[in-house]
Length: 257
Image 1 (cartoon, one colour):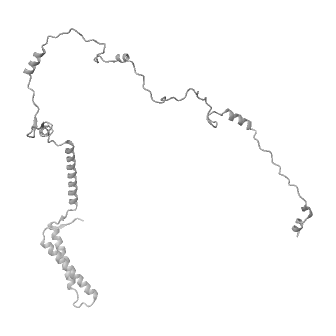
Image 2 (cartoon, helix red, strand yellow; image 1 turned 45 degrees about the horizontal axis):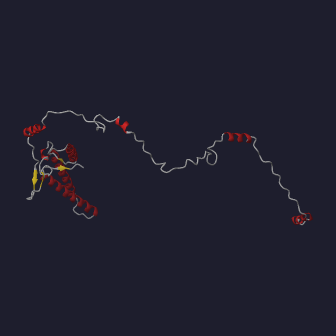
Image 3 (cartoon, rainbow, N blue to C red; image 1 turned 180 degrees about the vertical axis):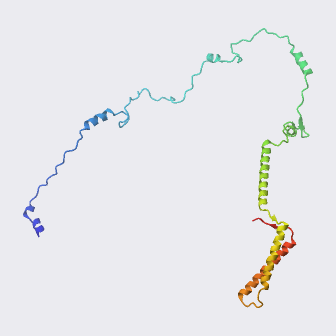
């Protein structure tokens, strides 16, 4: 009821003036002027926004045709090049030949004597392969056995000899390894003394098994007695087989495991 009475108060019917909040004064740093001076002092043209202010080109210096093409160096005059000519060069157009030189040599007789006394010119060997006279040089035909006359013909190259030696060495090493492996796994032959002692031991075991077999009762009525009798019979049969094998063969080999 108190809240409703407060809302229905007559004083609430009058309009109230809204009080505007007073803003505090804006903060201004005391170092602001010094910062502005330092910024203007350290300011450079490259750090400003926009393009740098440069002088505009003159309208007279416009781009001309073929101005960007590469240009050849200027050719030197003939007089400058003539200074560097070797001694035995082509004669100049202004040079005159030496006149008045005569020789007493008889070139006709000299050439005739050289042709008469000189060795005769050997004709090139040719090969004719047709009745029409078709011929060709024999040296370039491949019919002349000139390669078999070389000094190194039939000689094995060095790289083949070296490779064969390496292959032979590898083969010998492999054979030696195989032989060593076979020797390790080779069977051992029993000596006469070992064979005799082995045979005596087998016979002794057979005698003991036979003695136990003879000691069995006449009536075998239980399963354990039957199994024991079968065990003795199989043991005696195996011993008899081993004794027979050892007596038949004098050389006995044992494999190395």
